[in-house]
Image (cartoon, rainbow, N blue to C red; front, side, top):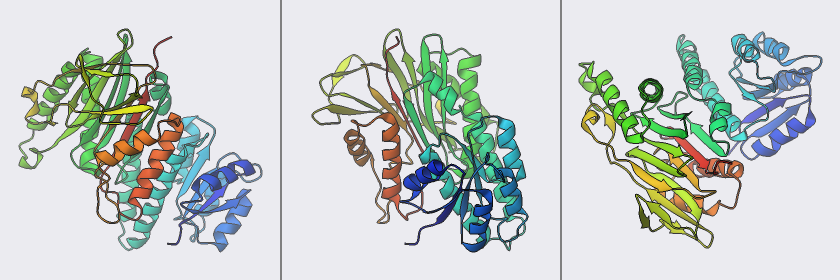
Length: 408
């Protein structure tokens, strides 16, 4: 199968070589060491996505972008800006000029890999439907909606300030996503939730924004602390919002999710769930007490045990305000790893139409526990990608991992 071609333009050779090393297995990566060299390659080659460094001597990234947009042959090639600068003005300038997206240094290669795939999908569909005059405007609206949705979610720095040892894999199926996560801290509790709204694309994204707003209300405004009280507040408000509509098509709208409270004083995790399980991995020598009862591991090897813990088998929606969601309590051990995930990963099909499944996910996670969380993220992303291969992504995918460290 022919690889898609990506051009990286950066005056630092080490950056170019690093990008080629990490992305070379999936893409045909070409390298340019200056803006002028990059424009020469673009003129002669069939490049599908450009990774463009902003700060370069001679011709900087903004000038390269301007030159591409002024050239009919090049103006529709998606450009992902790469910047070490964190000022939003720089990012805003690049996006205003016409850049497709941006990533910050040091580069998160799972993030940039996904953004390249989205850019390729965008270019392919844009090319195929260019005869439809309003398509590009519509699609760019989706891109802008994705940026707005991302601005509502916690950014990486805020997430890591609360959970330093953690990672997030967030892969929308249709640019904008029906999956979202929520993180915050209050008193001695750290909160973390993962949610999967009905559908994907625009409908799912609208519900995810509503869910995020209602989560903020439940904790930051209403002052709820217990996960079951938070879910009850969320369910009541969600139900009230949906019931304002007389549209019968919204009767099945809602969301599944799992919400955890990490209590540092008690060294416990308390969680509540609507149709989503929780995964905990710990030292095989240490038993796990679940609601004060010791339980057997779902899977074990000589070093680690993995537990798949279920919750309430009900969704949050129109009928959920009357549900009393149940709290579950687990005593934590040092270096426990807690995984939250939506069903997009386990329902993902391969080329033969087979689902990845919870069983395969547990086996894979157990097999990578000797790796750091950073490497686990890369391994899991590559596993999803290799499982799917050329099969379409069937749903939004969200996976969160947190390693428990007792407070110093």
